[in-house]
Image 1: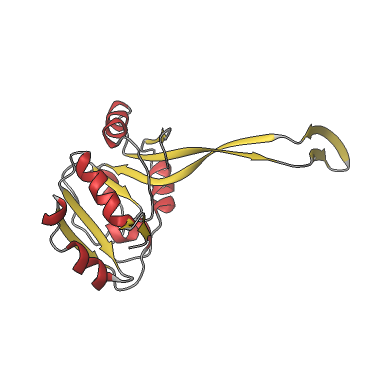
Image 2: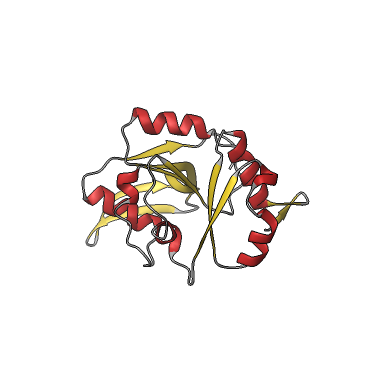
Length: 184
């Protein structure tokens, strides 16, 4: 419910989901649940059908999903504190084209090391890189899950999305990375 430009951030997220054609929104709530439910109601005012999944204790992003019935279709999951202009339709197309069980949105993150980095084998220097630029992809907190991926989430247990991703990779499932180029 953090205000951004005089409007709650979660309201902006719901509006963008609706603009992308999403009509059913499940919102997991714990902290300030009463305030959130009072604000959004059944979602009709925002052009969506809103269903609430209440956590008695924080279960992590994937753990909260374990409280829901297994969906019949691909599910979009987005953290409630993310302001982005990502193209959800393009992400779904990418997910489908890659036959992914789970697709995670990723951002490129560059890290400039301000020192010379030394590589060693024991006491012997084997390499030197002066102030290297390290390039990584980082988790953007936006995911698409197939029902099969949702089906491995334990019910009522703390379970982070990173644990779900690792479990799926361990099972040989396809986990895709969708690069975000839009505002995030």
